[in-house]
Image 1 (cartoon, helix red, strand yellow):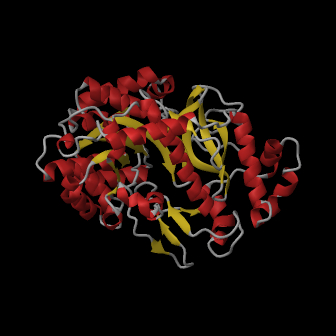
Image 2: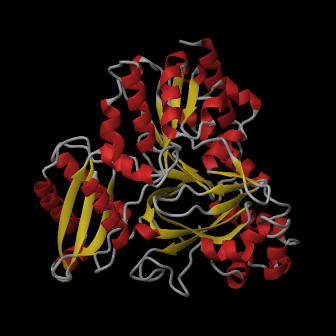
Image 3: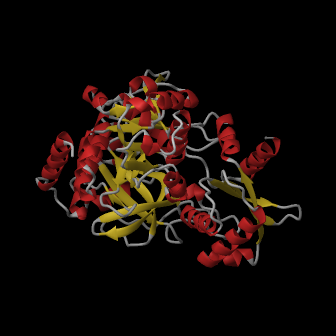
Length: 508
């Protein structure tokens, strides 16, 4: 047993025991809103919408919702954030030093999200809350003297025309690590600044024998590729031959379950999976207890949340918000109900729709899972397929056929007869009988989703499955210069994008 590791673990337990935080979520959230409004009442956005007057109201939440509209990215950026790049005191006091380029999905242009000093601090505070939860997992002492490998996007930030540094949020976070963090942070600033993904992973593989990695953080698809490269380069049977203390993978960005079998295949012993919800717009939640991927919602770190039911009360048939949707606060949410997440934050985002759909699996404490993106809602002919339902079906079929499928893409296309079908592309290193997979997938979706079953009996005339290798898939991603780090690839495509994908596959 490591004495140093034992001391560190004991210190974290003591810190947890001495934490006296309020646990009333309704009070926490009202306090956060009042704090945000107070800090922003004298800047342009606050003056325009009358934040000072709101703060005088008995029901500040109701006043806020009455006066401030809901914004999507384009509305917020065009009306406010573009001015924030040129002038101070627009949506938050001062002027941001950084703008986060959202990782987005293949074929989409990046969004620019302002990153303020207060926002960076809030993300660190949520990270601290995660660390306080560590004793709940009963990790071995050796973990607490090992190193953390963060597979971020490049930390080599660029300067835009207004003099602000910009890059993906993970790269901004890495570039702002304090100097003492270098003691246990890997791959280190030099390698993290390498822009080319393949070159960066090659350097990681070369340096791997010199590191004592206990924790890895990143998006599952790219972490898996990195680990496979380390194993291949160093001629290993599994990753624990080189990093025996590897105990934790902090996953984020996409659902983990479709990657579980492949992670188990390259591991010599079990790894604890901790899920995180860390986006360009904030660090919103994290797994706080063992044996679950549910995530504790960060209720008092500079975020005010609102929730729009992801059903006929809040969205239309395409997953877009209604003109006057029903809106819930933390006091009104229900377990097992899907919601479109709306956030206001100390980055100067106000009633901002970030595009994610979440569901509460617990209300005491408030724990969530991400069930998908509003734009990953496939409902062209009434099939009403959310990302969660599609993930579950892919996983069920993969297990039934004893194969591993991590990534997939789907779109509604018209066949030669002019009828709609669902075109699926599934990605695997294993050989797949496309006909069998197609039948099982169709049956799984019919059983799990009555709306899909109705659609299949009417306007949705069939489905088609095309299986491709991971190499082909990553070549497709690379052509759009979207390879590596924190890139999240699309699961639902429009017809034009899918046709382009199929043409690429045919020519590969």
